[in-house]
Length: 246
Image (cartoon, rainbow, N blue to C red; front, side, top):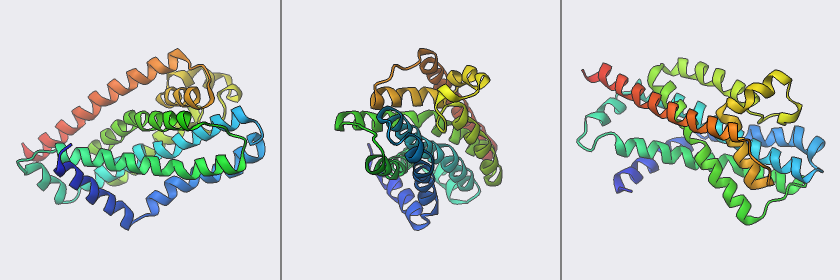
């Protein structure tokens, strides 16, 4: 990795630390949800508590990847700094890499309060290897949502990105079984759920953290979503660049 990409990562992280409300909100809401819903209702069931911990870890990570990244990219496009960066001989790769790495750092950070609540107040059980595997899945699982965030950020203005990302976020979280166990979801949601990218990531997290058997349909759907999101994000970036510099 180039020193230029690391420099971009550092300055993007400093931007977030100086206005920490986004980081706090992204970490606080999943932890509060753990305290309000998991601890009293599933806290004494080791398997259910472990699955819920994995789900809410990803809930916070997904928020940063989809909502946070889309809004940040859209806001950057409205500032003179971003177009200037695109004119430099180094190209967009360093800034793009820095943006992804900064988002991954906040993603892992948002999982910490959920893990603390799960460890202290529930019977969730995860060994160090399983926890590390879960964090690896968490990082990899944010990729399709970062790509969706980039797609929204390059297609919409900042105010539009706020609305569109939130409209996508909550239905995907509900349909994917992040807020309620899939077994108690309504029948029609159970039919749709395996075809959402959130369910695919959740299945992987449950598999490595709670030793469940993942749904193959959900995993295939996740792979398809990732490829389509990558193609769409690349198209949106080229479209935006063509409109600004042609």
